[in-house]
Image (tube, rainbow, N blue to C red; front, side):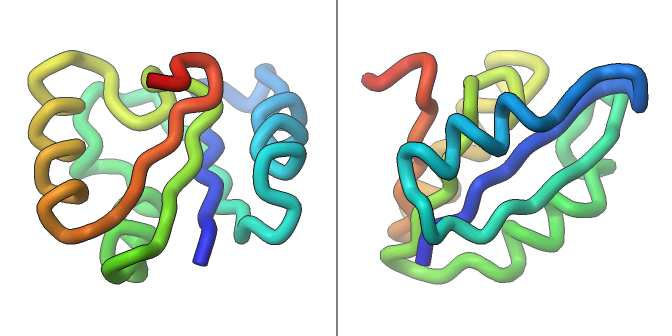
Amino acid sequence: MDYGYCRISTKKQHIERQIRNILEYSPKAVIVQEVFTGTKFQERKELNRLLRLVVKNDRIIFDSVSRMARNADEGCQLYEHLYNTGIELVFLNTPN
């Protein structure tokens, strides 16, 4: 199953570009949206819900790395955990 995670920091920002980019990559992706302006992924309610939902061989698609994590340490920890669980991560603006 493909999931797309879209996050904006304020309600004044527009999330549509992220949604459009993810659906162009995977038209059947289930989109999870969040408005959150914190620095720790543990506080992101929708991301946490998604992380509890995904299983081995699922894929999470992000428009950019910054949508997953706000700093390198957090991002590396989350990436490693998901990789070891068999979850594929895709970052559209950073293909590798």
